Image 1 (cartoon, rainbow, N blue to C red):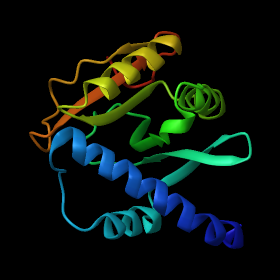
Image 2 (image 1 turned 135 degrees about the horizontal axis):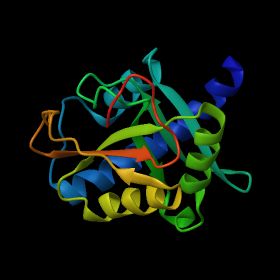
Image 3 (image 1 turned 180 degrees about the vertical axis):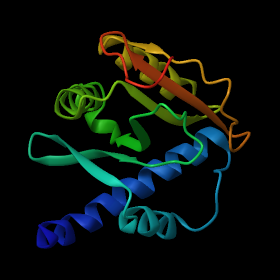
Length: 167
């Protein structure tokens, strides 16, 4: 497995840099510090992050990174840290397919993520894909936003009740 990750790392790093460059064009700046490669290295090495690779046929076309984020809604089962699909592979349902597989495999009933305030397309995309998965938007008013450049979004399954939480 480590050999495969070593082989794929440069390709993923390239995709990650494309992703950050695209976000920077949309927002005009990015929260946090460091070069694109420093940011990638920190996320790639983070023990509490899981990388999920998205393929368009045999070609690596994107990624979804799930992990732990301290400012997420306390009821979150999963936090989507980053998600990207290369422009040539967009519109093919890669993230939707990943989300449906992830929900089926892990049974998450509450997902949270942050989007850049100016990235209206991404905000609409997440609302759409979670609606297709039969999730409703989650009220996040009790969680402070960590940065004025970010908006927190959350989604709760209409089918599952989470023990111990009233949402």
